[in-house]
Length: 175
Image 1: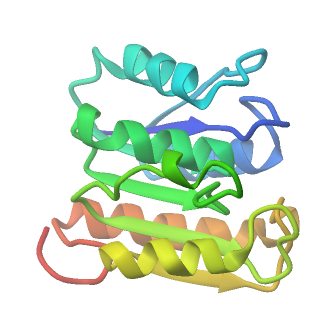
Image 2: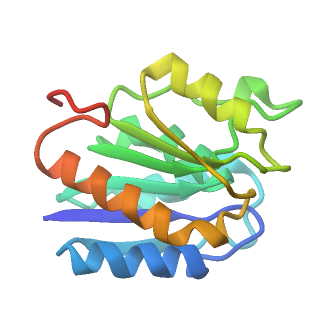
């Protein structure tokens, strides 16, 4: 079985609109789904530790999904958790003053979805990160929250999970 674990952004909660929609999708695909509650934890390092602790007992195929700071957190924890895939939305990579905190890309399939009109995390940051690890990158006509793009996000998430389940990486080759 595949389990999908969601990590929300700094200003949102564990069961916001996007996560609820994505969780419904993955459950409909026969996957387990859970979302980690990071409310009250501002430090990304503490969030990574919480994610690792919460996922320690999962023996299923693990896919991490993160939005904004949650994308940073999921990326930082992916290798340690032995994740099979990483799906991130407007991930907080290369943020001014925190560039050195950007996680090293893990060696696993990665799919990045970002909005062209993001005024919080520049889309160029995702383009730069994707270029370092050959990640699939989908840039949508959306802002940082991507709330108007939920159908497109779910389309790409389904595609990504199907690729992982079939033993393929995000770029279509063998994993």
